[in-house]
Length: 487
Ligand code: NBP
Image 1: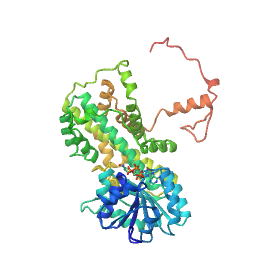
Image 2: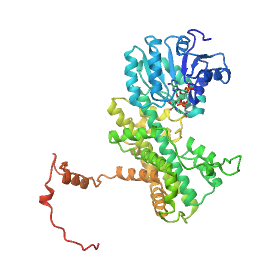
Image 3: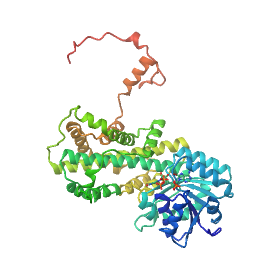
């Protein structure tokens, strides 16, 4: 039986995220009505973990809506895509002017743009919020990145900021603030996920260099990651990586990590970030390489066949082991800086395109706790954007410029070593190439423009005078004295 009109918020979808978020909301003293499409899931929840006085199970959407206080707030935690549109269609006639529909899923930002317009046209308010932190974050405090109808923010703010992770010296700064209109919140969450792809790939490459290149055992790897987690790399992903190297399979007694098939999956947010970067002409190369690395890993059968055909050097770096570990740490840190720089550059490009006013200091603080990329180093990023809100590229913030200068000798050594001994490190390599490309006032694109103009009359600009030019290359070319094939 629902209690008519007494609940603070309604939640639809009781899978991993919804169930834990509902418990989080209830634990902060809010009353919550819950609904799941499959009724048995709702019943199991309200009879189990959700058996609490301020949790109300509902068997229909009408029942859920009737359980809420006005203005009503209904949050969907369902599979992103058509399910969200179907729910909006059913909910809209049940709700009243000023009520708020919230989507907490990993939704494509352009879908939230469209839905915000459609829902606002029906007299309601809409929020598309990123929610990061997985199962544990949802339960104990996620990072939340809301965007959509600005008028909805004061209505959802108290609940969102109460359930979000908290950071800061007093532990009272919520990792949740208003991001911007329409799909801005989902865009920031998508970039968070893309950075997460980059971080994970970089850590995997560091692991492979240390295992294949320096011969470290899992126990040694755990100790290295434990050490790394005490310095500038201190982060959730380094911490869980350390833990992973300690876990043994209860059945066989072997290390769990060595029993896992090396075929990675993906749910699409990294690919979206990469696709949208390409659409805007923004070089977000880390996330793109990370997506490709997963694609290549998935070609397991082909790789197994090729491994007995394609030759390379043996994969062992016979240098000083301790020194190499230190160099890999520096390469990882420098690559990570380049990766975050790319993420923030993409956010700035999207903000320009979409006419959003993004607060990059606030975004860094939202990622400081609760989410998968949470790390000490986000504090430094937040400081950099506080000092210079219009910072063109994070690599130009004095703190990070100095860090890159300090790390680059080791970074170059690691990339060169990987190439020499034949260990694939696409993310380390693209990060270094981005750094080198970005710091060069001149690049060989002059030749590229000449080629384009030669075969396609695409025209070019000149360094010595303004305007657009075309050359009749065929008419002006000269015979070249043959070198006879000798250099
Ligand atoms: P899933 O993404 O696996 O979705 C399952 C839920 O969606 C179930 O409650 C299911 O109901 C419901 N659902 C589906 Br499927 N189609 C529906 C429809 N047409 N109408 C109503 N309900 C429908 O759940 P999740 O992993 O908890 O994730 C929820 C959202 O949060 C997703 O957008 C996800 O991308 C995002 N997210 C997930 C994580 C994570 O770590 N899992 C982290 C951050 C964000 P049923 O029981 O009747 O099938």
